[in-house]
Amino acid sequence: MADLQEILGRVIRRERQERNLTIKELGDKAGLSEIYVGEIERGQKYPSAKVLESIANALDLDIADLLELMAEEIRYEREPRTTNAIGFTLPVTPGQPRRLVIKKMVNMLDEGDVESVVDFSAFLLSKHFTPQ
Image (tube, helix red, strand yellow):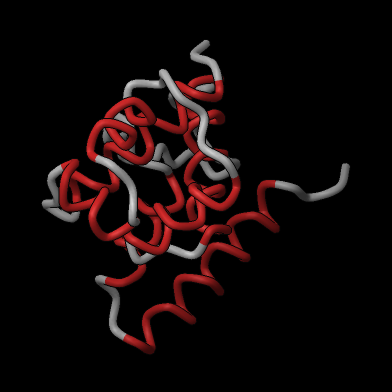
């Protein structure tokens, strides 16, 4: 398993690339040098809390969201493919947290459909976890 510095760097690189930013552009937005951002992305430097907050803001993320993405990355390394209680396997995109996959799937639904999906999921879970 990768260490925390490597995971942090991987998450920051992925988020930067998803926003079509260069290392220099991210550095400029965060008030950091291009070299320092590159070292963070390669897992060579571990940023302070203040630097981490600057990078999160430059990526238009709350610090909590950035930390959540790191946590998802750690979970992904520990169990890369999981099946939930109703037997549905989430589509896996390497490096993409499951939370984001589900969020994208839910965002494709119409407003009224979300409630019916929640109700249906609750129904399936109640059938699967019937006390014996």
